[in-house]
Image (cartoon, rainbow, N blue to C red; front, side, top):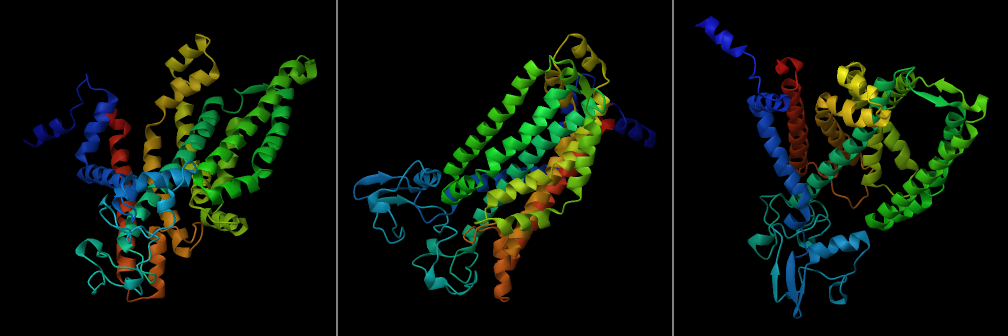
Length: 437
């Protein structure tokens, strides 16, 4: 019986199953990872619809015979593409007499101060509210801000930090890791003039696109996110235009024998040394330094810094995979067909090297959330009015008996980081190369 059982457990997967199907089957065997993934879906839903779940603005309402959608309009105002109606500008939304209104599930925004329930009202304390609908179910802080609303807003911030910072890290890590692994130290060749001009114009592009426009970017960020995105796009356009110039000039100048001579660029050594330098930079210390010289702290700057420092692990995995993939037959066939190196890398080499990256992303999101929470706890990297799990946890220091300010955000941070780690462990087992057999 024992031999039969062992034979069943080690039997190979059916030949008609694809590798993705095998990975999915193996992942589903890990019940903790599956339930963690389901929980992440709920967290993402709460983060995306946070403004509809907790807000002092009605989702929809009728006021003085006119119908409004305040929550949706608030997005337009924050992006700078819309304005509030004169009847609704700078009003107390709770005091308005609506014809009818559809209120949020939690009728408080994270910044709304209920002065009648200020000075740390606990979840089980007696609260001065007009009805059960307006009860502060997780209590309030010193200023009377609803903790549940802050928790929901903190969920959005945590997901944004994890997704945006890791998106930046994935782009940088995949590109640099692929270049190091595919080209090695001898395969990438470039004319002298093109190399020298690109290095020179790269410095000019960074200066004119970002450093010279730092005040414009900072002012736009302090005004609204929509204007900041526009200014950031303008900076990238300037950077791109400047970098096109040396490549056009090199087409003409490389006809000179000395300038046109091809030289090898040791991409593997350069990127490997860059990884070592970046790994040695403490993330928290760098963010502290950047925040010290900024006019106004911003969660978006924090995300960008975390992303620019978190790509090293991804680059290592991609580099290791490309070192193996570049010598396989399908890559040699693509080269024999005369396909460009860029097409081979991005269409054939990278897609076959991303399985291990998924594991790094899962653990990276957990690390990014933990980093942001640590910074928020210290009151660094986020605007004072921005509510995060870390800032709620920090508020508990000023009044120790306010246990709800420590328990709820602390538990949320612990659970979120844990479930991402569980998903990472599930992917580690599911993507095990032995499962391909």
